[in-house]
Length: 330
Image 1: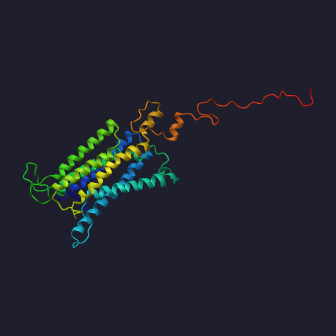
Image 2 (image 1 turned 90 degrees about the vertical axis):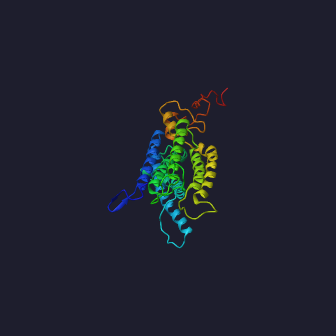
Image 3 (image 1 turned 45 degrees about the vertical axis):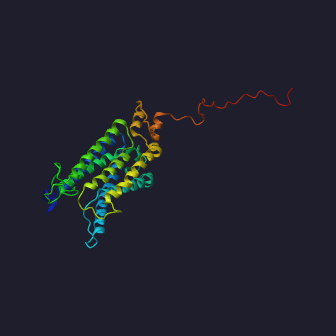
């Protein structure tokens, strides 16, 4: 634990918590960049995921601070409202919602209409449905490093304990407590590893549901062992416990959404590349590759306009010689 600044830059303290957050965000986007390359996303598709992901992350951090500040103020309105503290649930909701809003505005409004070359979405070979299976892995990685930062900052600590696992993990307090920060960090790294294994080994496309259900249940349980101030209660539950319930419900709903809707929208860019290069492409069990028009034209030659499916092209009409005689002839 190290709640004090590690060093200063231009008079501003640099904390271990901030460094862990930065490392987590870099690790998250590093993983996303690798996966986008591995899955053969085009440059336009890759840029869309990364740039909109950065904007969503920035808005998520702001929402994490805003929601926690509102909860603190609701618990004690006598204190002035200040933007301080962070809650992951607020950040997750803000980040996901802002990502979806910006993505749809870009893909369906700006991208198809813009005349700016680098801003167009016409050359995208993948959609959001192709990225959703691995985005939660990056989120879990970033969150795990964030929990390590919580341990250094001495926040999000557990209740006092006499167990051998007790650590002095609360800022400026030597009481041995349940190191809930380290437990959650371990859980998140494990969850990220499981989701990565499922995705890369079995082409499992339901990771968003796995993440929402798993973390929602974990967060609901771990809140019983925490002892830090988390703001006003909601319906008798800690704020994060309350939000864990819809998170699990949405996670269950995602399985149905993926099976009935999203799998049909997946374009499978890695299979497009194989098809264009003439390699055999095994179709996944939950959907067929959707090739872009340019790729299709390279693989399947265009049929003549007058050709009917399953029949030979029609012969051009030839003028038959007139063998009839004039009416006046015998």
